[in-house]
Length: 182
Image (cartoon, rainbow, N blue to C red; front, side, top):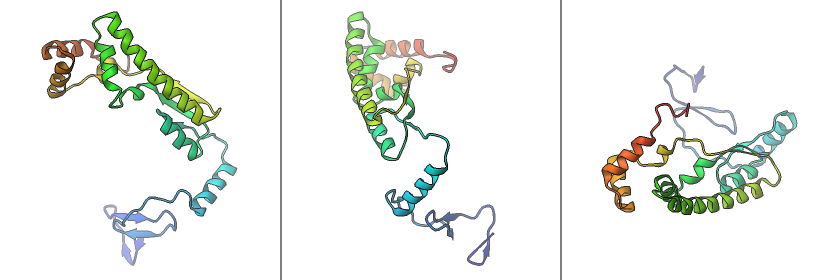
């Protein structure tokens, strides 16, 4: 293939203009596509007329679900509930539930997590407006919610009033050899 009279090799960097199909030698300055442009709308309408499959999105939050609907998704193919708990404001509550020493501590954390999920699921179902939503219940091993490096372990231990060595031992006791097999 030649671009601007130059024969390309496998190591040449090229850019393809998605709107015109023009091949440009080297890295061109990029700009986000205008998803409301008449060209994009026409292309998506053509695809909608010909396709036989429904398009579903992965969405783990109400905001993701609303964005998916705005882009034409006809449902959610996978809502990963564990992603709801990795948010900065929620991770400490998840950690309290995992590390609870008493039933009362665990129940208190679970009540808070339940409220988070009720709010999230309400928002997701509302955004989907009757379209299907596939929900995967909590999947990862519990140690994935806990810190893995010494600095984070020390910080969490100080925050919850534990000795760092005790927290490290507790985290290690939860680690799975092969998390894919449970």
